[in-house]
Image 1 (tube, rainbow, N blue to C red):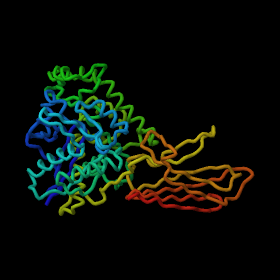
Image 2 (cartoon, one colour):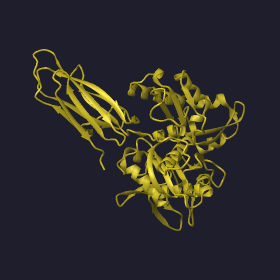
Image 3 (tube, rainbow, N blue to C red):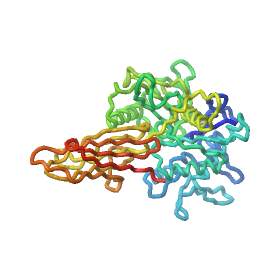
Image 4 (cartoon, rainbow, N blue to C red):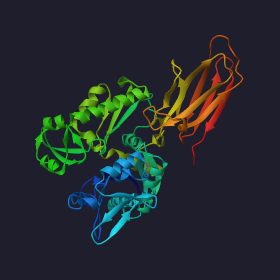
Length: 457
C-alpha cells in the first residue's frame, strides 16, 4: 500500500502519492498535474476540473469556484459575506446553513459546500488511484493557518465522504517544509525559515513563458484589479495572446508591491529582521513569476531561495511525505523528526504601556514550529502584593479582545516595596500537541506559580 497527499486550494487542487520511498505529483486524466477546483452542474451531470472551468462562461450561474473560502463558515462570517457577494453562483441560507442554489432549467437544487469539496476530493482520489490502484486511500490533507475547527472539520468530512481515510490535517506551510526535507532543527543549529505561499486568492494569475522574455497569461481570476484595469473575461482572452514580460510586470506591479509589504509586516510582527532569515520556501502557483522572485531575493539577498520544486506542487508533495511517515513505510527517505506541528494562532501576553493603556506582545506568532519555548519579563509596581499574567489568542495583526483571553497566572502575597518594581519572569512552553505550560517566578523571592492549558478536545 502507498499513501496520498492532497492540497485543495481556492483555485486549484493537486494530489501527490508516496511510493517506493519518494513522493510525486500525479497528473489527472487530461495530463495536467494541477486540477482547477471548479465544479459545474448541469441537468444530468456534475463536472469537475478543467471541463467545468472551460464551460463557466456559458454556465456561470451553476459553476462553483473557490469553495474553500466558504467551507465550514456561517452567513455572519465576514469572509463568507464577501464570498457570497462576489460568487457568480448564488449562495443562500437554508435551514441555518449556506447552500449553493443550482438551477439547471429542469430543476432547482441546493448544494452544500461540503458536497462540492467532496466532488473535488473524489477527483483527486480517482487521479491517485490511476497509479496506485483502488486499495490506496490513506491521505493527509493540508489546511491554511487561518482555518478554525469548523473549517478543518468540514474539509476533513468532505475528504472522508469522498472515500479517503484521513490520517491527519497539516498546515500548508508545514507541508511545504516537509517537501524540502526541512525538520524542526538543523544539525548545524537553528534556522529561521520563511514560507512564502502565494496561491490563487493572493494573486490569481498564472503565466507561461513561450519564448525568452515573452509571456502568455494562461489563467486569471476575473475579479482581480491589476494596475487599475479590471480583468474581465474579454480582457483575459485578449491577454491570452503573447506579450512582453515588461508589460505584464507593469500591470502587476501594484500587486507585487503588496506581496512584499505583507512579508515586511510579518517580519515586524514576529520580531525578525530580514538578516535573521536563513531560507525562503516558495509555494503557490503565482510565486513562479520571475519578477516576484527577484523582489523576494532583493528583500533577502543572503538567503537560500528554495524553488526547485514547482511551487504549485510543493504542498501536496509535503502532505504525501507526511502520509508516508504516518503509514510507516519501509525505506522511508525522511526521518521521523521531520514531522512538523505549528501553532495555529498568535499567543499574546497583556501588559501596560507608559501611558497606562493596555498593550499586547506576541510571544508565539501563528506558524511557530512546535515544541517552542519563550520567556517574558513582567514588571509591576512594588506597592502591590499580587501580579497577574494574562494570555490571549488572536487571528493576527496583534489584535486581542477580552473574549480572546484564555488563561491567567496570579502570583499572590508578594513582598511590598516602597520603591522599585516586582520583576516577574514568565516561561511559556508550548508542546507539540499545542498544550501550553506557563510558569511565573518572582525574581527576588523565588515565589512561583504554574499552570498547564490543555488543548480543547
